[in-house]
Length: 171
Image 1: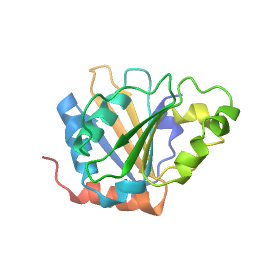
Image 2: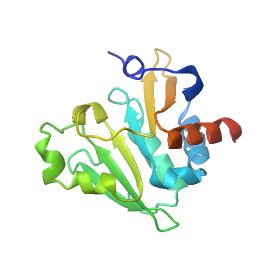
Image 3: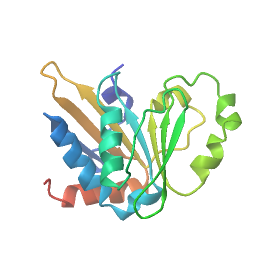
Image 4: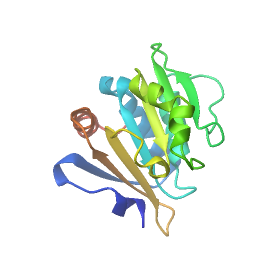
């Protein structure tokens, strides 16, 4: 099943994009980073290997003022960061997540319940233990290497983020 099929679509709470280059990804991340609601949001990122989930996260973290090395948390499950305003960001990667007991054992419940932005790659691997996201972003790769991107709001905070994305012009 493609990630686009796994995200139920509601017309009023969904935006779709076509990204032809990494510059399009960076521009989207820059726009999203301007939303004050992002500070405590939970964002799921779905897509096949190589679709661009981690690339989007890296651009978003840079746009939020994260300096230094940004690495994939594939083996660690989570990498913590701090935005330039001092608030926490947690980048999760559940690709290797195999046992729901890892959720409690790793303290992930506490991280999700606390303040800060939570970015989760491969959330389907932790189905049943993750709380509902504010935004679900699905990235698919077309035959021409363009990225088809669906951004869906799942909460009131997510709807506010979508409204901000709709009203902020691409740069």
